[in-house]
Length: 334
Length: 299
Image 1: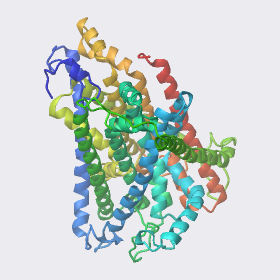
Image 2: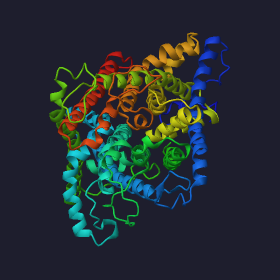
Image 3: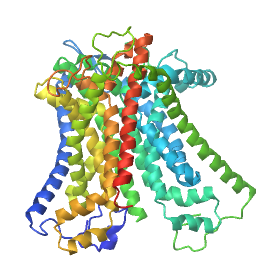
Image 4: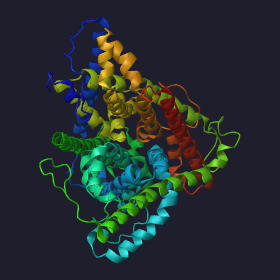
């Protein structure tokens, strides 16, 4: 960051940290300024410390349990955390979590972007405000309510769809029939997609709305249809925002706890492995939440914290990658 | 077809053919359809929760009694204890998270430069992505695992603070960036100290957005269940002490009956509790929007 940039550059909205041009800190030496700047910087440092501490504490409490683990932590599907010879691994948790989240993204990103385009471009002006509010309300519904609704109402609607796919495409291992009637991975994915949709829409909507009118008008003036205008002006401009939105949504989907906990049907130990999306299985978060009552010894707790640590690393990577992608894009579009 | 290429001036769209018009129409229809599809679950949830839960909400005991002495086969009871717990925890969480969040945003926009600012910004992004269950495990590892304290309401607040900070930081930051530099420069040119400029000029200008951010954060925090499962076990009794004993909340009240889905009375109570929670969150949301509109300086 250059401190001597003229204010024009600093003023552009897309700049990563557009601060007013002035020399750093020691500008005035007034007591109020010093205290205020100190408090602000202190808060920033606190945030860094918190994230670091999350990693440190999770690692510190997971290691003793991991050292005792008799099974391979990364590839085992067992989960016995009590006793002298605990055997636990995350293979099944990771598969369920990741595949359900991918299903959720496959539905939520296209639909969410389409909804955002509808709100910013296609909807009549009178509808835009209310439409945006409605989608925001979807985010305001607490996740436990989604869980309740998914189990008691939504399940009966998705079930026939699942049966149909299993009948038609059952030959493909991914869609093989399993006989699981409760919460399948597919169903978890569908519910998650509804829950993360408002995240995708809200952010995409914001960036789409920022598309310069001159870009839109230029496209239209060149004879583009509305769709072509969207494709050539709005979407390229909003792409970093959409990627960022998708990554945020993915992070949410990976870590969603209570709605999934309501839905999942955990597999009995020793159930043969299946690649089917219509199989049951627990996610990281639901396994931890379902067993919160069991946190009575350091070893047991450590095993669950180890699972939580993997989830943390997973979401950390997703977010870090997203950020790098966005920053590259931002540099290009300047 | 790129419109933004500056070097090539001649950018043409082919003549308006039937295919192009049809494609345009198809896009228009699918966008509208996507919106309808997205709204269906919302309407469905709201209608279900309302029809299934409203009756209990109008019963005389719901807003004043706790669940003391009520078991899963009995109808009704009250939600006062859980409402209390949810409001207390949300309030305390906001008290801690809002100052930290706003100050961090101020740092990022007004002071931050160089590596520290980049690190802070990066960490806020990471914190945004931290799943609530991980935040809960972290607080558990510190509060119970390291210090050996009991699971109490305040531990829940600490976990919720972690979830609320990034929401407040990001929204506040966005709003501060929108404050025109001319306002800052004008104030500084009049000899107003920098911190007074921030407190009296910059923050009020961005107030509406900050309030929205706080309310969004609160809404997320109030509906959050994972930290409660790990750190705040449910009780049927009224509790107001954040530092000792169990504290009931609306989400844990719903979760309590998760294994009783066969009991009509329990299911009705779950819906009623869900409705109460939704109403609380929505009232908060609407109030926030109203405050934002009235208090806005920029418009």
